[in-house]
Length: 471
Image (tube, rainbow, N blue to C red; front, side, top):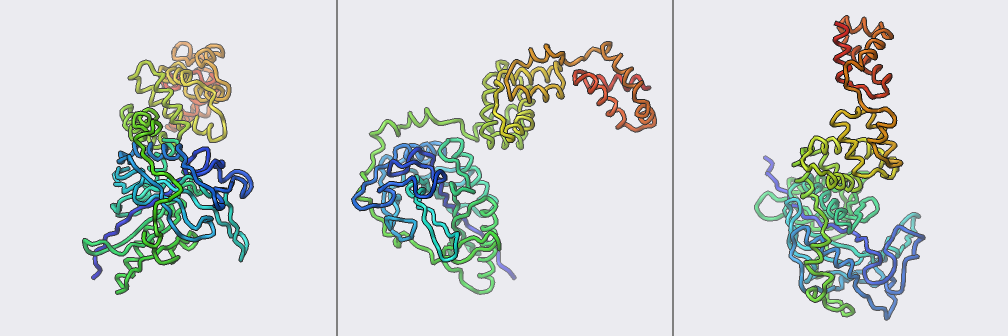
């Protein structure tokens, strides 16, 4: 009989920070811009005699993250040398942190954090030709944040939810674009399985560059380790890679320990007393802290948006920013019907226009005015959608435009009666079908009326008038 196994997972997430310059030199921090090896200098190429200087902006970004996740922010910190030799490490060591990271503790989406520290990214190795390896040092020295969770995750789905929330938080704080497909955020999973209360042997799966890869690799590795134990084997402590084509993990090397890296304080970099620097003060960090995703979710639930709408809004930065401006311009503050309608239009019509590359020239106050017109019956939904396309592209006052073009919705029965008579006279086949019980014929007749009225007729009233006329 098979045993019951429990998986234990801890994540290590690296994210490139979007500072103007690199971590320890003045080179431009844009590894995707320009030709290879153009954003480089003697410091990031590790020429003898060069001295690194810490990037204060990168430190402040990490501390801002600490405030967002409730971490303990260090008062004292230092950089260490992590020694290993790869072609993409020009110094044969990486400047990182070991004993004194900038952040300890905290939590995100219910997952406890161990630490967050700051280091420099490596260069990028390219293997485009068989037997030939090229190294691009544009990425060498880019500020790299590493976040380590406690081993408290027990399934792949929770791991992916955490990684998604971290990506959203990094973007909300505007400290990293965290685009996994560009290597700006990389996930590594430490996975073990056990049939007892003790932890099993930890296996690290490195450089997972999509959420799908994170979930698939963890699921596969859990099953692989269980199969090894069930067959009487022993799980080896090792580092494994993920083969996206075959959907399997594979052995890369035996797992290094901290001793293997021979950490020691970097003698070229001063110790850091963060309490003496106003740039890192708690007051300043609180001042620049944006509204966090969970706070937005709480506010949107109070308005009455659906969970699907809420998650779309917090994930879509431009749309969310526009919606926040709409909320700020709503003087009634309790007009939730209008605000829910605004979310509907934003996440359908406006989001589609943004995805087509359109710039939003419509003012939030004008957009809110249009939503109030729709809600009150001043214009039909059809008219609003047509006006919205124009307003997004050119801006303008929707109330004035509707009045100028005669687009106000008609809800006067006497004014619509001639239109009803005209529709019935011109669509005899549909009239017969309706009287024979085909209800879809009524929708056809309403559609003809909306077309003739250029969307100004109240569709509900129009349907009632047609229905009464055909009794």
